[in-house]
Image (tube, rainbow, N blue to C red; front, side, top):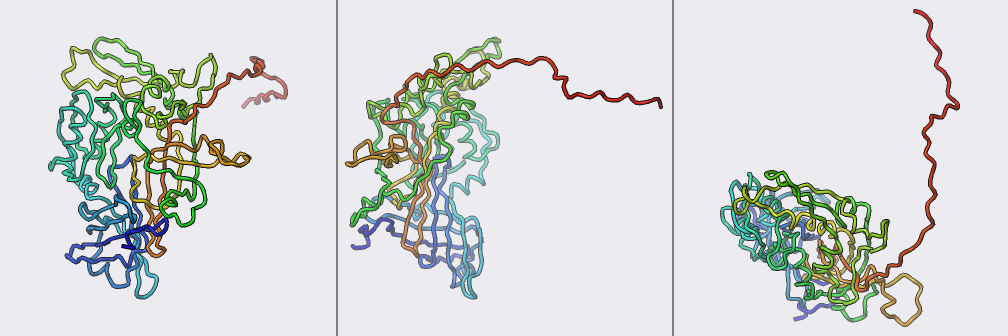
Length: 469
């Protein structure tokens, strides 16, 4: 069928857009949709969005639209296997953000929607104790009918260590966010877990597992996006055209030094025996040389963090006093199974990995593709802006901006009236395919300034004494 073939980049198929009201009325508003926005992020366990409709037939009155209506639709890219499908697992409209008239017979409505799990999460409180691995506890919270009760597919990475938690009247999402900070994967022993949703289901995974396995097996990128003019008569290739890109506040060495991305020290205080254990974290040694990275499949790859020699012949990751953590523990004589949170295994590296996710980010706008989701790896090619002579070679590519990235947030923007589907991706990287060269530079020694200890008496006047009263 012609409909199932991609004619041009930005084509889409939007099936349904059915709203079911409290009155039982079911109205297909596909012809009234002016704009559909869909949002995903690896920091949010739900998909959300908004819908702009032009209502000239009283839909808002017939349903009526009061903010608790079911929303069913399916968005897909022609010829692609994956879709954003809310026909089986419904969305719910929770807010009429705006409503205004454009004529006597037409109203514009902006409707906010989200997943059913997100709404149920707000209505559900957990006051219970749990014992088991963190992944087992998370699975129980997500799947049990007593808590979130989600029927959606769940991809969960097993964690190590038996733990005990008492959840004090929190929502399921709050409870999971509370305990996920202490999660450490069983096989890779990697900390820093993320909990998020894509059209494929819910994910509770370590960030490390999204990149590869065992430091030598990389996950393949889904597509290569290029900043170049679209090609003639090649709609599939043009899907990966970067329409616009920008970099915001990257490589902030000041902030990340202060917060502990590069190096930190943990003082683990045993409150029973009155002793202290000290653990030092080094970004290069404890993370980059042990964990998966996005460019690990290239032998010449290296860290995105500069290894420039600073004072005392040290690099930026060799100053563990940059950030100090103090965390209590207790003697083995006091621990029962599950009460030791093993902070030395996760606290410093998890904090560093969270900061690393925003250390070097790029925002790109491209054509819509429902095969692309949060947590996917993509390859980006951006030309160098240096003066270069033809032919085009690898030297023509910007080595810093180009490379493999992981998608951390995604915004689908569908405009039926313009027959256009675009995406805005926020992506992050942690490495370069060629390690930057570092040459120790000798700088002229700074002059030593004088230390003034006397008070400057020039231009001072004496306060006149007051007379007798």
